[in-house]
Structures are given as C-alpha cells and as structure tokens.
Image (tube, rainbow, N blue to C red):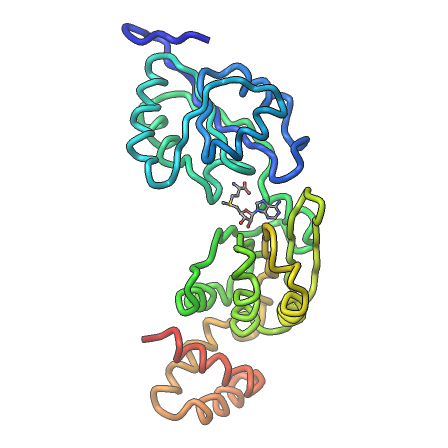
Length: 288
Ligand code: SAM
C-alpha cells in the first residue's frame, strides 16, 4: 500500500494489535488481515515477531520500537501517520502497552488527533484470571514488582489490605523470592495461583496457599522456568484491616520493644501474637 509523502490530507490509522502469548493459533482473523494490509508493523523484537509474521505469511515492513528509543521513534511514526501511512503496533506477546512498549506512540497519536483502533486478543493477565478460580468481579493489575527485595516488600506492604484479586507478572528467577515475600506480607494462608506457560506445551496452573506454593516452587526447579502470572486473593474483610494493624503496631513500637508491642496489639485486636510480631519485623524493615 502506498502512502503520500507530502500535501496529504488523509491521515493514516494506528492499529494496536494483540498477538499470541504462546500458541500461534491464538490470534484473530481480523488481526491477521490488518497485519497483512498495513504499510508498516511496529515491533518490539524483530526476531521474535518474524516467527509470527512468517507463520501467517505477513510481508509488511517492520520497524523496531524499544522502551529506550520509544520517544524519538514515536515522533517519526506519528509523522508517517500524518502522511497517510497505516501502521500496526504489536509486541513480542499479547497486548501491546500491557507491560510492553507502545504507550508513548499511542499517546502521541491521540494528542495529534489521529485515529487509534484496538484489535483485541490475548493478554496473559486476562487468560490467567479467567482460569484462576479467584474473584473476577473486581481485580487489579500490578504488573511487575520491583526486582530488589526491600522495594518489593515495600510495594507488597502497600497492598496488604487490597480487597480485590491482585494480578502480577513475574520473572521465573524471582518467583520463589516473591512468593516468600508475599507469604510473609499477606499471610501464609492467603489463597493464590501460579499460572505458568499459558497456551504452551508446559502450561501449569496451581491453586494453593502462598506458603504451600512457595514450598512447591522451591522443591521443583521446573516451576522456576518460563513465563509466569501470579494471582493473589484480595484481603479478607476483617474486624481490623491490615492497614489498621500496621498503624497500631507502628504507634506501639514507638513506645516499647517489638515483642511487647505485638503482645499488647494481640490483646487489643485478638490477632495472633506471632503474626503481629512478623508484621512488626516487616514494618521495621520497610519503614525508614
Ligand atoms: N503484553 C503482554 C500481555 O498482554 O500479557 C505481557 C508482556 S510482559 C513483558 C511479559 C510477562 O507476561 C511475562 O513475564 C509473564 O509474566 C506474562 N506472560 C506472557 N506470556 C505468558 C504465558 N504464556 N504464560 C504466563 N505468563 C505469561
């Protein structure tokens, strides 16, 4: 398809196209059609996209967009759209912009009043949520947690009283540490799910308590490989929210040693002493 390079009054369209998260058949007819029609396909990693494009005999030119060159290249791409080019953006897997590049380009196109069209399809978080068996009426997507332990504990601490199902993406080499941190922060018994390698040969789903999942992953090296979504049940509605307990402990810990503070907080709230003691340790770790 040709597009004009000057004096063009008709703007092109930016299509945001979802691609498979493993199984190459998980793509819509419309997505394949659009990818065959557009002038340019913006990709994240040209070698990874080549597999999909070859499979569907898609011959459009590709253009690489990484997180580190997104701003500069988005300006160039928006210029092409203004000159009438039709462009599709895809990522290595799933829906672009969901923990993937594309935000700057889409935003710039919207800012320039260009048409942006979604071509929906796979998204690992939705696929995992749909089979997790955790409440789906309300949920929150937390993306990737910080890689460093203190920052991760801090983030988890902020989520302790989140009542909605929480969905996280996690790297395989960090999954065990994350499960252990979740177990300490959210409680050992909190129900959770590991959804690994969805739509692929070694697809695995396991639903259990956080501590049991951590134990299982530590015993089986295979569970520390591949692509992983972690889902955690929201905080139970209790007499005292975790935020309340944290506040109470923080106040008591300013006046007395942790052990005494945990004892007293336990008497006040009826929550187990050792659970409060662990919480207090965590507070000491994450609060400056
Ligand atoms: N844009 C993608 C989407 O729509 O899901 C996500 C891209 S993000 C860079 C990659 C992360 O998504 C992986 O680290 C993993 O947490 C999750 N993921 C992608 N494919 C997956 C799969 N087949 N099974 C489980 N998790 C997957």
